[in-house]
Amino acid sequence: MLKNYIFDLGGVLLDIRMKNAYERFDALGLPPAELEPGGSVYKLMEDYQLGYVTSAEFCQQVASKCAAKDSTRYVADFSARCAAAPTTPRDIEDAWNSICLGVADLKLQALRRLRKMEGVASVSLLSNTNELHWEYCCKNWFNASDNKLTDFFDKIFLSQELHLQKPDHEIFKSAIRELGASPAETIFLDDSAVNTAAAAACGLTTLTVTPSVDWIKELGI
Image (cartoon, rainbow, N blue to C red; front, top):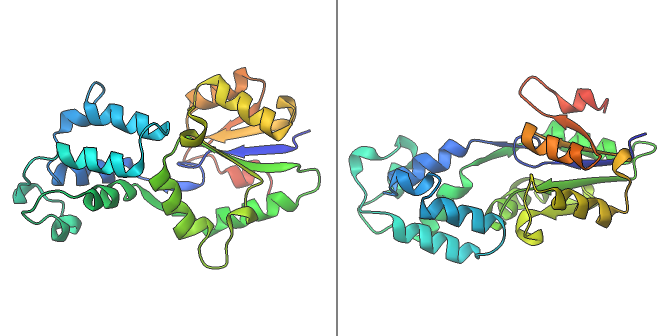
């Protein structure tokens, strides 16, 4: 019997579009090669996700990689922020947070219902994320209006705090230890088959969430 439910953030709860940030970085004059494997910003994003650099350091270092901006390359809805001036850390923060589109209210309500269901011991979040995205999500959805983060989750496991990231098996084992849970009684939901395979290898039940898989229906909430 499943007693513990662990959710990924982006692609499961949070609607995301990574391309938004890449388009805005391009508009700010960041060379595309910087975002490819082997590029310094690509490595910086990994280090930031693992909590090895601060938000201020991340934004400042990405801003320093941006060349003079070319007005012919601006994305339409961002042109007002892309004046002929040096790229600032605030520009980077805004571009970076544009990835986060929203958390649907129906998902928030489903989490509330799940926590009240008979036999459910815990509902947790486990995510490869970073401080800026996490704070943005809390401000705009999990702690917005009458919401409180504690309404939705018993425990929160974030890559930047654990210095671990999926699909490393240790992040799942760490969560199970912290919860005091049995892997056989725990389900992990993620939009990446690589990550759900890693969780399954640790003994967890898994559900890979895709556009055609409605986790609310699958869990019968």
